Length: 101
Picture 1 (cartoon, rainbow, N blue to C red):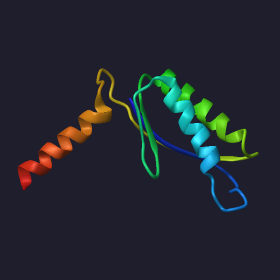
Picture 2: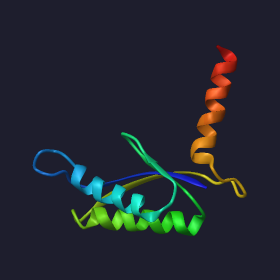
Picture 3: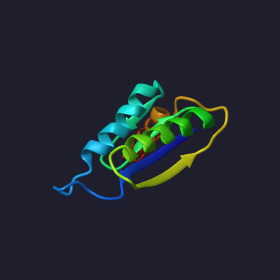
Picture 4: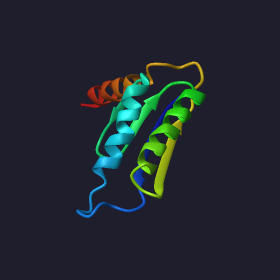
């Protein structure tokens, strides 16, 4: 499964930024060993249900170490038996775009 998620503190720091808390969450994901990718809005993780959601919980806990409240947004692509989709979906998209060019 792929899960794209965004977790942030409920309140920003004095400069309006949430980067320290978000960096702590992303570090948890990177340390997990699961395939992952972070962009400007979401971090996507690939793995089995229990390991992905355990990682998201640890990432949320990392944010809660910075603030008393967190906001969590999730989107999941649950496709049993498929792996390598963090890159596979993008490869197929690019192939489709090249076919239309």
